[in-house]
Amino acid sequence: MLQIFSISNRRYLGNKYKLLQWIRKIVDENCVDIHSFFDVFSGTGSVSSAFLDKRLVVCDMMKSNYLAALCWFSPEKIDREKLMAILEYYNTLDTSHENNYFSENFSDTYFDKATCQKIGFIRDDIERLYQEKNVNEREYGCIITSLFYAMDRISHTCGHYDSFIRDGRYSGTLEMRMPDNDYCLNPNNVILCADSNLIADQEEVDVAYLDPPYNSRQYCDAYHLLENIAMWEKPEVYGVARKMDRTKMKSRYCKSDDAALALGELVQKLKCRYILFSYNNNGKKLQCRSNAKLTDEEIVEILSTRGDVTVFSTEHRGFDAGKSEFNKDNAERLFLCNVRR
Ligand SMILES: C[S@@+](CC[C@H](N)C(=O)[O-])C[C@H]1O[C@@H](n2cnc3c(N)ncnc32)[C@H](O)[C@@H]1O
Image (cartoon, rainbow, N blue to C red; front, side, top):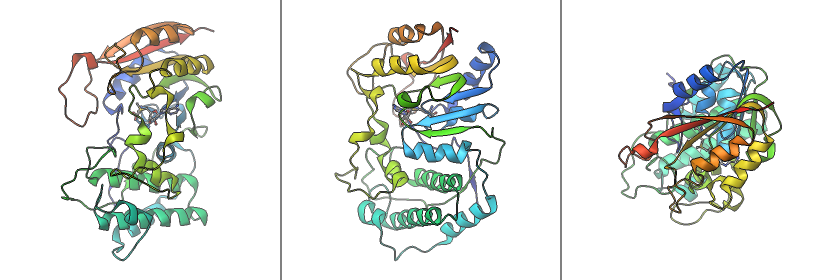
């Protein structure tokens, strides 16, 4: 019997799973006449999942997040029985004689060899199904998302792919599950894979929600493995962490000398009535990798160019691989800009 998985069953740096009710409440209590919601830096898509009753525009520059957003929010119809049959087939498959791109490059790193043989086989097979038009784009997104979540449950890591635990004690079996996405969606939802700064004015919306990276940790570094699988161009990988070339994948929001400039440009372009900006920092712009690239003052100054700004805050211990104690300076904040007409 196939199990199901939900959007929040994934480890992702800076995800907002624990803040959804709070974010929704701020919108419900402070914004009027809201019919559309633009998740401008969507990541896992968790925040969009709190606004399923709105028309959604969902964007992330990473293809792995785009495929997940198709799975959770695309209005394209999916054949659930066909999907279940495909996922069940992958679960019963013997791939112990398979050799493929994934097993050749990743065996005994984040996963043992048997799991890598299976991941590579499944990914090749999904591509074939899609190229031969046996699955539509959303079904393709659903299967690859199922693979990401299956990998995430057993990867021998601290939750991201900057490194793996080198004790060789792998455990767990790769288990494909069915996404819990059998809900109503607005037929005009739009899913985008792009640098948000380039497409910011493409859609007119009521609320634009901004949750950019807040330190120098590039998501393409932490999730290179998922991005490799999403793109499936089988690039050369190198180093202990087996990363591919990511020079074209870097975000301006992770760079001290560019983050404020990028935010300023984005804020000017957005076509919306409210801008809701999520940020977690200690208010000081330090050079350390884990410290924020924007100060509260810079954020307020940039948002104020479009309208009045109100700041809301709550205590939240972000996903940090479970190492540090809760730090009061780590409070999550939402900056709400009521855009001038
Ligand atoms: C803090 S995470 C968002 C987390 C998300 N709200 C969630 O709950 O999962 C920031 C996201 O911004 C994306 N990103 C960074 N720079 C971007 C850009 N210029 N355009 C679009 N997405 C970008 C990253 O890939 C990452 O997924």
